[in-house]
Image (cartoon, rainbow, N blue to C red):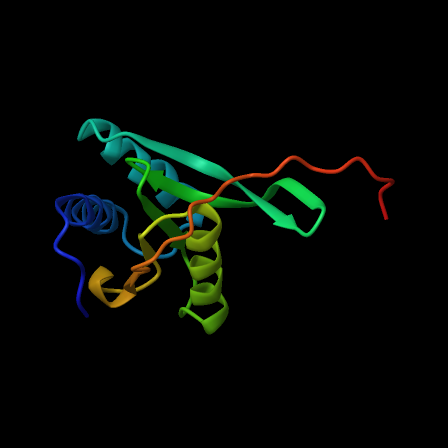
Length: 142
């Protein structure tokens, strides 16, 4: 497993490992989310939680189509899971969120593993699309 050598990525992974060491496995995703946010707060790292991701399809605009778990320093998307094993749908979710958020890097972290490094995946998009919401057209809804 390789991660881009970005100090922010290392900091987030370190914070996640700290949460995992303290809490272990078997909790809800929302608990790990709140605890990781606490670690980021203590490290004085800026982040947004439950980030609304807009989606535009032709003339339709959905201002809140999805919600990403965390956007750290405005450039690192972090998606958290507490599942038996990561599935292809989780990877697809992260890749879609990266595209919609216009970010270059993302982490997918599954806390439901005995050793957290086995639940970490890093994704790089060398050419991120800058997310730019368009003005929706007024039309009757479907």
